[in-house]
Amino acid sequence: MPLEIVTIPCLSDNYAFLAHDRASGETALVDVPEAGPILAELDARGWSLTHILITHHHWDHIGGLDEVLSRHKAQVIGAKADAERLPPLDLTVSEADTVTVGGENGTVIDVSGHTVGHIAFHFPKSKVVFTADSLMALGCGRVFEGTMPMMWQSLQKLAALPEDTIVCSGHEYTAANAKFALSVDPGNAALVSRAEVITQARSAGKPTGPSTLAEELATNPFLRAGAEDLKSALGMAGAPDTDVFAEVRTRKDNF
Image 1: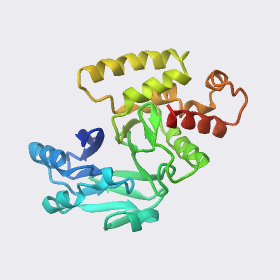
Image 2: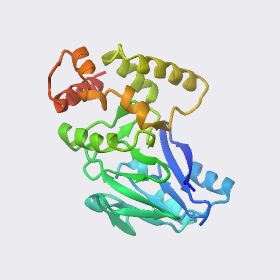
Image 3: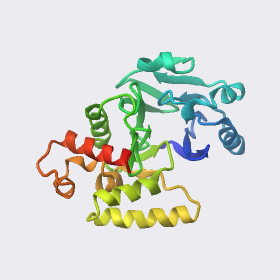
């Protein structure tokens, strides 16, 4: 039985996620932007938190940890490579390590770029990946600490997952991402259609995610940096994929 995934809006535009195993009752939390909404959701569902999976050290992904831990004595898991910048960890993990929630093993993926030491968690049986600020709906995280080639390599790891994988990312940036995507990839019919759906969802106050990897591969310009039609639209026909990604990321930074 797949994990039950619950999306929790936090702060002004963050998301935390619960992953609940019905058989065992174990529940994992992915990132802790603030405690209040997370604790309220756990109380409403009668769930007890057993694991906390931290993707990276930025304050808006760990700020509520102490308060959550005061109510739930969960195991805190994070990247070994970034342990000195994370809160105290009960378990440190690296690329290809596994974390177990109930009856399902999740695989750790190093997705450095936004930060060095950023990790994602892929649960293949449940067909879900928690990407935080690496791959986002129609976007990717700003490259603060890593390099453009590093971020492109990280995105390629995620792009190689099965296309029906559900992508749970860390922020509600999708409307702004769609506006930018249309500026660099205006001839993409799938993107135009998705942008309309996003506008309707936001007008109704609904989250735009999670998305599927298939949607991202078809519409996300950061994943499409290797596509010849996008390269041509950018005036970069035949350019290396990494260069095209860097151009798209730079344009987004200045958009």
